[in-house]
Length: 106
Image (tube, rainbow, N blue to C red):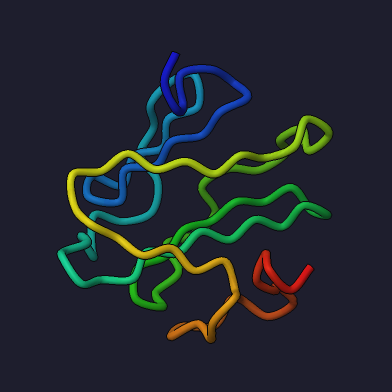
């Protein structure tokens, strides 16, 4: 099984704006499409069970909601380019949404 292949896993393609969670569905708008050098964001509200994504500070809207939080989360990426990941150990270029914090500050 791959990321997003079942109901307990989410995969997000920010080029096509498609969310995988046992099935495949469009979310957000078709723009912007990410390109090399962009900053891709993922925000998860565990209290309200909402997951959203963004590109360069532009929120793409709610991608998933109502999910089970008792099993925990394991981040993963699949890509063909080099990237850096920031979980909050350094200052974000585009801050998290109001009321959110970086994983490292929990």
